[in-house]
Image 1 (cartoon, rainbow, N blue to C red):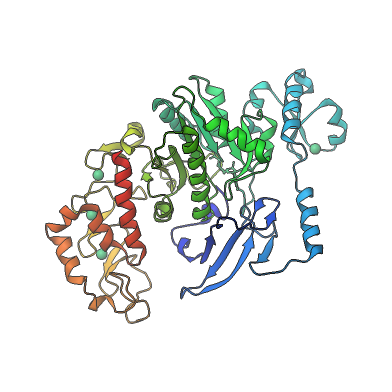
Image 2 (cartoon, helix red, strand yellow):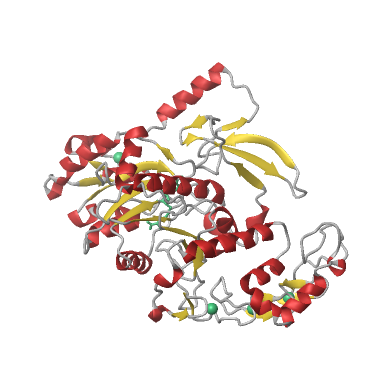
Length: 496
Ligand code: SAH
Ligand code: ZN
Ligand code: ZN
Ligand code: ZN
Ligand code: ZN
């Protein structure tokens, strides 16, 4: 993950106000050193759309990639040339092929000649040592060579590319789970430590391919184990040859089932990520030749729980699981046993939830009603007919809202919904329409759905309507409708 990433919280996620417009067929976006740029549109509070512009897909900070162009802007020849020069200058020092032959040479060096430059983050060959003599260099053991995620300094660029590496607990859990489900190939999208572990453990015949924008990893892997890739625009820096590597990997020979695990930066650009993952799935589907156009590649997308609505909007076939993913080098989000803050990061997957067995010793249990493993404090609510907690705390049911809410919330009669006790109360501001149904035409007090909602929360109807009812009545806004539809689709997908 990255971006102001871990600083992105539930509270500010909705205030970004910038929409990504996915590329239309046949329309080409201008390129920056990170491949085709994305088309953005600023939307203000009132929903007014601003002028569209192209900006870098990978870097949220203009300092990292300053590309900017209005959609309708004419670009001068001089600027084009300057852009091209910049692209050339930003190319990696070595080609991937060069990296591979360097690695072979390096591996055959005697121990005392195996040196890594910490300043340049590269493995050094003997002839290069003098050029780096003023730099900090370290010896590299064979064991370290097999653990690049420890050898390399995690990128800590807050805005664009911070790297948060899995704890052993989380990485082994993921691998054990995938191995247990019989997957033989793991497509690691932005998960270098997972790839490393697969090779290290070597318990079962498992293959892996790492797709990552961090080219430093090319130094440690062969060409069919690493592709320099941008997951925000599905761009392969190595061109067709690199695409072919992915194609070969996605081709399942004799029951070698593929699964994909992605742990992207948390920048909020859910839409382009979902688009790239859908394209990967499409490629996989085509290569399978099965003719079944509904089936998707098994995927685990690792992301904070508060992105759930956005992710499900883009990929309705996914379900969020309660498992808390934690990271070695993130001080705030560690596993929540010892009173440290709990990690907000979860798994979103299209693998049947009941097949992803969450460890009992870490406090997870199986809910037979929900048919999935949940966190111990996540108590099943018979009124909502689900285990409602998203954040690992015990939620409580509010009959007025007709749904379960966070323990810290209480029902506010003027807002007509649950909120933090010190929320800015909306009574009388009149401008925001109805909090029950999202309509801008009336206030909540005059909502035609109000009576129906009462019945649903107390009456027997609520049960029979199950999830759908509670969802429809849960939050305001037009999104609800599509979410309910998403749920339905999701259930259909799971029925397969
Ligand atoms: N938890 C993972 C690492 C996640 S950090 C693990 O332990 O393996 C996010 C990862 O995504 C990093 O490896 C980073 O290099 C990669 N990344 C960041 N932006 C990317 C992009 N635009 N395209 C592809 N990979 C990207
Ligand atoms: Zn150096
Ligand atoms: Zn349940
Ligand atoms: Zn409830
Ligand atoms: Zn309430």
